[in-house]
Amino acid sequence: MRKLSLFILCCITIQLTIAQTKSLQQLQQEFVDLRFGMFIHFNMPTFFNADWPDPDASPERFNPVKMDCRQWAKAAKSANMTYGCLTTKHHSGFCIWDTKTTDYSVMSSPFKRDVVKEYVDAFRAEGLGIMLYYSILDTHARLRPNCITPEHVEMVKEQLRELLTNYGEISALIIDGWDAPWSRISYDEIPFEEIYLLIKSIQPNCLVMDLNAAKYPAEALFYTDIKSYEQGAGQHISKESNRLPALSCLPLQANWFWKESFPTTPVKSPEKMVNDNIIPMGQAFCNFILNVAPNRDGLMDANALKALKDIGKLWKHEGPVAPIAKPEDPIISSNLAKFKPSESNWSDDYAIMDFANDDNFGTCWNSNPEAESGFYAVSLQKEQPFNMIVITLRDNRRIQEYRLEYRVNGEWKPLYQGTGTSSTRIKIHRFDTVWGDNVRMTILKSNGAPSIAEFGVYCERR
Image (cartoon, rainbow, N blue to C red; front, side, top):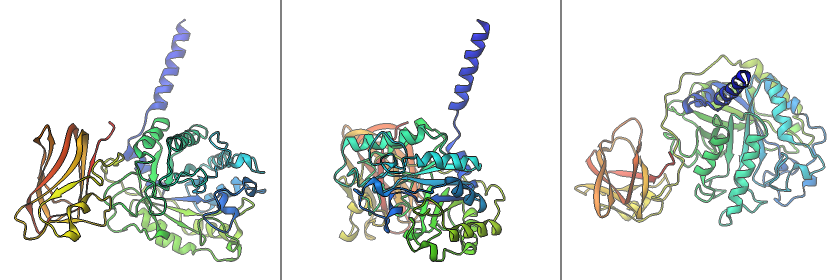
């Protein structure tokens, strides 16, 4: 009996050890310390000469007869990369793992091999970390703007459960297709907070990275654990001022997915990859991920392999980057103030109050310079709970002092009063949950006309 009790106690101890999680700041530090990894765009577009193939193309097209993920892993190792990230599903919805959620997968192709499993096994065998890419947009499943159903949400959840349950530890998920100009799928239609918390419930140490840097300010983590910058889309990190844990990505070849011209077309310069990306990114708390696209045989071309070896000769991983400052926790819940009726003091029509809650950080509400005092208020239209207000100012020098209040049962109650000037123009206020139907910001002291880019109200799950 004593032996059985000791066995049970050991099992409980092991389970508790497994359940222990690292802090988000520690995970973010470990991510930037990785410095350099391999993005692998390999999916149905590989077998077309386009990154957006017919979403109803037959699975028969997918047949990489010589695929060898060990070649990919050894190539990554030759460049002194520390991890890989594979496109498990791209925008046309083809799944390259053994999924139970759809027939549109590799298991319906002539290949009939779980590419995700072979990838994770090969990269782990080389001592490399494992990350996965997943697209929210799924044009085969008709998961696209104005067509999203509850069944679509469940499909996304089940696919992520499979990926996070069947392949061991996944250090990060890079998610694409949310809240982008070309996808137009909002964080409300496919609820970000639900998906985020699901991921953390399965793998607490898995970072969630949403490729959304184009829209959101560089000073805060909106809907992501790591700030991301896709250079080919014109998104460039400030190497001088960035303080958030970040990711910058670029393809070694001309496109993300393999094209017929790739074997005979020069790849990007290894020297530029090292001197313009890996080294300066590491000094700016940014991890650089370089895409290398396998061909239709499932192998990397000779010119890409040579470039990776040349990178490895020019650059060695010399250990962790500088410690990152603890950032504010990511904003992951829906914005209750978005598109709601708002009021303010006098302003011109081109900068009227509606521009401060239009879900567009490029527009602003500007108080008229002649106004004696300034206020901005947004109606939630009914009493409801909230516990966070995020104010994105046009700049951080104008509003010097302000007061926040909320209205419940027709009575205004205080939330905050204090300074508005700081090193960042984004003011994140978290507080115990209150109920109210209106939120008001009163500007008490200002250096010039007050201006607000976005005013958000949230109810986080805590």
